[in-house]
Amino acid sequence: AQKVTQAQTEISVVEKEDVTLDCVYETRDTTYYLFWYKQPPSGELVFLIRRNSFDEQNEISGRYSWNFQKSTSSFNFTITASQVVDSAVYFCALSGNSGYSTLTFGKGTMLLVSP
Amino acid sequence: DAGITQSPRYKITETGRQVTLMCHQTWSHSYMFWYRQDLGHGLRLIYYSAAADITDKGEVPDGYVVSRSKTENFPLTLESATRSQTSVYFCASSESGGSNQPQHFGDGTRLSIL
Image (cartoon, rainbow over all chains, first blue to last red; front, side, top):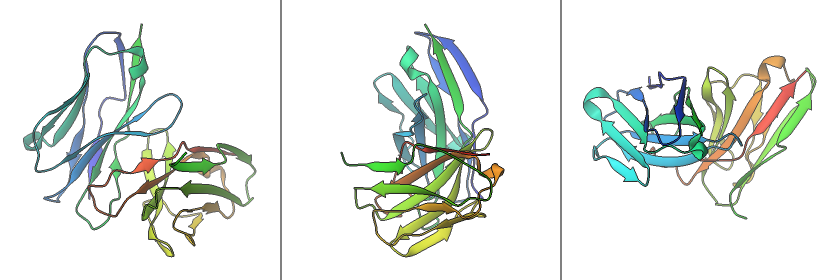
């Protein structure tokens, strides 16, 4: 069975601080994909990034960066110089090689960025 | 505007009533999904559909019925609503069934059952 753990339920930071959201996963599949989604206070779910299990290169997109480490089964998400607009619930999700693209979600981390 | 739309955005109903949540996508995506989001549980899959007339159960299907007569629509019906079904419901779609495909979500339906 697949499992995604986001141990941090809630994180509070002050604007301009860097913050890292942790994601640890479990799967028996050799090929799998990891995703991050953002859910702002307005409630919609926004796709941020996808990473496959064969690509361990870190990825940077503006203030966002993702660190994938297969050795520790982790796919952490860092926001540099956080802003109030980053306040949201962030979900990590896993899709395995089981023939269809169902996602297993973590329980989410609520990030509160105060001015 | 193209995308995935859910209706209604908010719904209040009483226990025992039937309620249908609508989902419509304009991308012609093959796969569609229904999730429920509850505090402490994250998102859990209720049902999914690989194509028109093909549906399958997810993690928490009890008390729900789905249909997919057309590719673009995937309604979710609570045949006899219970208070435990109070939740936020999200519909999603993906281009294909490959595990690399990101799912794109609607804005959600907040359902309260009194």
